[in-house]
Image (cartoon, rainbow, N blue to C red; front, side):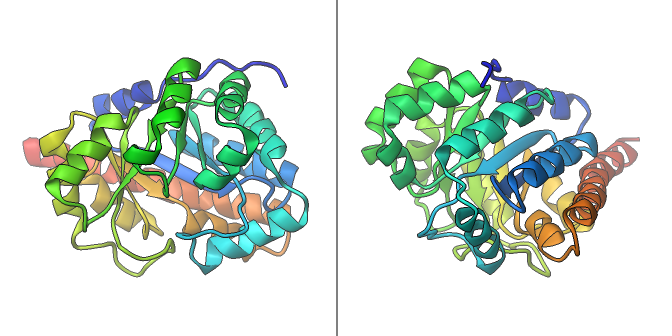
Amino acid sequence: MEPGGAIVIAAAFAGARAEGRAALIGYLPAGFPSFDGCVRALHAMVEFGVDIVEVGLPYSDPLMDGPTIQAAVDRALFAGTGTREVLATVGEVARSGVPVLVMTYWNPVERYGVTRFAAELADAGGSGVITPDLTPEEGGDWLAACDGAGLDPVLLVAPSSTDARLAKIASVCRGFVYAASTMGVTGARAAVSAVAPGLVARVREVSDLPVAVGLGVSNGEQAAEVASYADGVIVGSALVRALLDAPSEQAGVRAVSALAADLATGVRRRSERRRGAAD
């Protein structure tokens, strides 16, 4: 695997901000629907408007994953996808010129070796890591490893987080703060969370980092809604579902492309509305 050189996450948010819009962040688990199929789908997402990519590390005990992502992860695990394949996927997608993060539960990182994981991810061209089940109190070694490797650590805040907790979590994040819009598991929903705008506002009171909202966005209209108050819109389950429902990998990549284009139009539609209001 050739060293990729991480793309700075802050630059992606700054670029979106310069266009008067939120950044679009897309997720797929590595190895789904296959190694090559995942890489093709991720490249297609970037081609059709995704600004930042999340590569999921398949794990057998996913606490936050809803049924859609669990189904995809099970297929990836059955095919033998592990940390090496995740790193290889990062290396392939980093060549597209957008920041690539790994989304992973903590246990696989600890098993692989904290310093080793950080170093090899950086060598692959990774920009950061999202660890949904890691707390600042337990993350000292990991935060040090990220600092040494030049990676951005991203932790999650939730609607139930106190103001003091928000400040604590945001203080150890780099790149952006991941705001989970609901207290449940991942999954596309008919409507986005009503509490997410308040959570974003609370994070902004304690941090200057961009705030990206995840859990629930499934189409361009919902992306536009979230983009009206957040700095980033995170989409995972809807993109995974597009692949799951497709009759073939080729058809799945086309479906992912169409959805990415719709989501990208959504975040830009909000930008156009803002300009119209200003005029």
